[in-house]
Figure 1 (spheres, rainbow, N blue to C red):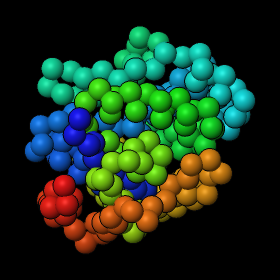
Figure 2 (tube, one colour; figure 1 turned 90 degrees about the vertical axis):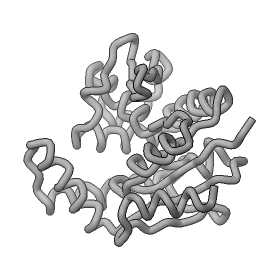
Figure 3 (cartoon, one colour; figure 1 turned 60 degrees about the vertical axis):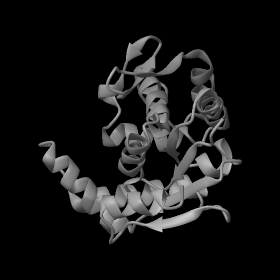
Figure 4 (tube, rainbow, N blue to C red; figure 1 turned 30 degrees about the vertical axis):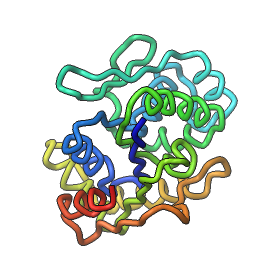
Length: 218
């Protein structure tokens, strides 16, 4: 079985966009693991479970049925208890919720299990926070895609405005810095660039340049 490609990095660094393009070029599936954690956050919100109540979140993730499904065009969808919640995943609230619930060991363990099942069945491009350090530690294709917090905030502002949604730079920058702190300082399986992982800073890169940097290694 050919090795999957793991891409880690902080929020807004462009790793998902890069991963999707690489998957398309190589004609293999793309797995957005962050969407899986967002699915847990959506479930928590629906069930009235606080993102910071670790015991309740742990019980919740053991009770819900979270699945990844792909459309005929290859688009990834997240189902929670049989309901497609993909349209609810990309709000700032759910993004922050995903960062908080991901600190719960039971959540990380369950998502890791599901992600490894996908990678065992087929070669994939997978991005997230601990793919290289935890989910796929044995793959030779490990990358850490990052960018400055300021550049990531600018990208998020542009993305939201293109969607016709309000976007305040200072608020978004604050949220990114806070989320970076949450992800990198959590006690259980934090975000970091492993010694055997190639670091790619996209602050002054185009998406195409970042894609080429990874493809040249694979």
